[in-house]
Structures are given as C-alpha cells and as structure tokens.
Image (cartoon, helix red, strand yellow):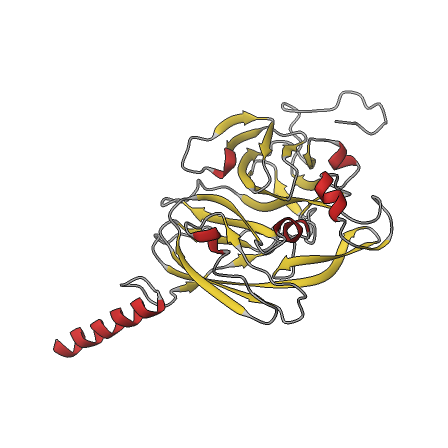
Length: 336
C-alpha cells in the first residue's frame, strides 16, 4: 500500500511538471485526422480522454485552377488543413512542427482553445522546429483554426486554415453522411484564368479583390456522394481572409443549421442560405429526396460562376416524381 502511494505521488508530481492534468495518462489516443472532404467518425466514448494532435506546416506547390500553379502554405500539405475531431472535456496535447524546407515561421490559433492567442503564442515555430501546448476542450462546437504568425493575413490568404469539431457530451444526432467543406479567397498576381505559376498579390488582398474563391482548394471538392433518402451533414468553414460566404446548396433546403457553429443551441430550420463569416463555421443538415447533381455554391454568385466557389454532391437512387419531375425540357442549361 505504501509503495503504491509512493509511486502515485511520483506520477502526480511528474504530471504537474510536464503539464498533464492530474489523474490523466500522457495520451489515451491520437486524434484521427482526415483530409477534406472526409470527416473522422463520431466519438462514442465519454469526454475527458487525453488526446494528442500533431500537425506539420508545409509550403508546397499545387494547382489553384486548371493550368494555374500556386505555392500554398498548408497544415499537413493540404488546403484546408486536416479535420480534427475531439470531445468536450478532452485534455488535448497539441504539437506543431514546421517543415525544415519552409521559408517562413508558422503557428496555429485554434478558435476552440481558451488561452493566449488560441495557442498562437505557444507555437511560433521556426523552420525545422517543433512546439506544443496543452488545452482543455471546454466548449462544444465547430471551430476554425488558422496560422497566426506575422503577417497573419498573408498566412491565411495562402491557405493556412482548417476546422476542429468539439463534439458535445452526448454527440451529434446520427446522420448517414458527413463532409468537410471550407472556403477561402485567393489573390494572385495574374488575372483569373491566367495560366502558369502565380504569386501572391498583397495589393489585391488589401483591396479585398480575390482572383479566385475556392472550396477545398487543394483537396477534391467534387467527390461528395449520397443516396436518396439519406441525411447529409456538412461542416462548412470560411478561412477567408476577407470574404463572408453566402453558403447554399442548389436544389436543397437545409433542415437544420447550427449557425455560427453553435451546437449547444437550438438549430435554425428550413434555411435556404446561411451566412458564414471569415474565421467562422456552420453545420448544415438535409435529407436528399431526389437523385441528381446538387451544386454547393457561395451565393455571392460571381464567386461561384467566375471564381470557382463550387462543389458537387452526387445523389443516386430512384426517382421521386411525387417530389420533383420535369414536365418539359427547354434544352438549355438552367441558371440559378
């Protein structure tokens, strides 16, 4: 008994020294991270687990549009960064590595964090370096994270943002499909559609005149799928740095919208379009009743048609003529 108590005191002292809450293990689990549009599975355990998360900041070339190359600044090599899923009450140890090939220092500010800079103060990381901090997930909701190193708007404009979900204690209602969609505005030295490698235009960014507005800029925005009769949940975020999104799915009505990502409140119902501010997020849910291609857009519609803020949800299954059926086709593409 004395020996057990002695070792227990040693463990408690060790936990206090390295900053792990008393009574917890160093890490019960490593958080599952997914690349957009995928979402990690729902967490079925209670909150309060000790969870570790590790991201790496990487500067890499990718394709912003057909024939348009751009050097993105990323978390884990994608824009948006990985979807992070934890549970309210979890003890999270967060580690940030900055790739040695980076030309810039990077950091992370998670809007789910209660603490200085949302973690940014603790994670100012030079190329080749590694930093970390602990936080307790106090508030459920869907939250944006982004880089917060100087010059902050430039880091965000180059793609450094993502979403973290803090699930409520009892989880979210069960749905059939979950997807991750995040919008960002991009500012290139060339004009929209101009081919070749493009640099970042700080002048356009300051004037808030983006060359492109993209969903899941370095991921695949078009492989969203569902079957007739299924319930779909979209976690939608806006990295910005400047534009507010008028998020809309053409041909659907949102059965529920957790506005501003607030899962602890009663959702709005029967919503056509929801506004999402830069640095904000929302959760939208709807049941798909009719097969076809459903277009996700920013309904500030020039951004969708001319600048790329478009994704497709492909719904397969039996026709539903009691809900919708064409009577006569005019033969031309429909607008919206």
